[in-house]
Length: 291
Image (cartoon, rainbow, N blue to C red; front, top):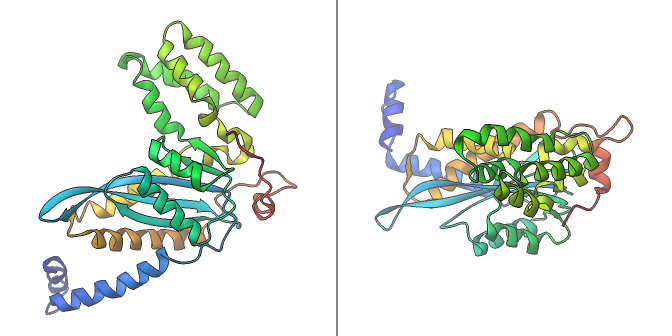
C-alpha cells in the first residue's frame, strides 16, 4: 500500500488508501482465478512442458521458500498456451500429482510428449497421469548434471562432443552418434559414458517426433525464458506477504503472456510442404514415443 500510495502521489494525485488497494487486488484475483481454472479446450496438446521456480513468502512469522510450478503446452492451432500454475511447499510426488490431475480435470488431453527436468517425484507423477506419453529429459539440465562428472577444465570439450548427438539430421543418425559418443568417453570418462547410456531413452525421446519440432521439444529452454520473465517481475517484490499474493502477481504475468502467444506466430514450424504441424496436431497422429 505504501508503494502504490507513493507512486500515485508522484503522479500528482492525493494518494490511495489501503481499502482501495485491497479492492483492486480482489478484482485482480477474480481475473487470475478465471484464467487459471478455465477449461483446456484447445486440445489435443501433443507437447507439454513442466518446470518450477522458487519464491520467498512470509508464513507464520517466517520467510520460507515455496515452489511455483508452471505448465505450458502447444494447442491444436500450433500456438503455445499457459496451462496452469500452482504453489506448494516442495516439489514432491504428491504435489506434482495433484497439479497434473488438476490439468486433466480441466480438459488437458492428447499429450504425446512431456519435457521436464529429472525430478523423481515429477517423473512418477507424469508416468501415472500421462499413460502412453513419452518423457523427454531436458537436455540443458541433463548437460549440467553430466558435466559435474568431469573436471572443470574439461567441461567445455566434453559438452562440445555431447552436443554432436543433437546435431544429427535423422533419428537413426542421432542414435548412432549417441553410441559413438559413449564409446569415445568409455575409457577416459567412464562416469560420463555410464550416465549417457543410462539416460539414452530419456534424452533421445524427441527423435520419435517430427524433425522440425526437435529444437522446441528437446529441452525446457522455452519454459526457462518464461521463468526469467517471471523472476524479472517478482524480484521487484522480493518477499511475498503470502501465497495468494504470489499467485496474484505470477498469474497475472502468465495471463498476459498467454494472450500474447495467441496473437503471435505459430510456435511449431511446418513439418513439410504437404504436411503441416496443423494437420499433425488436429489428427493427433504423432508417432508413439520411446518409453
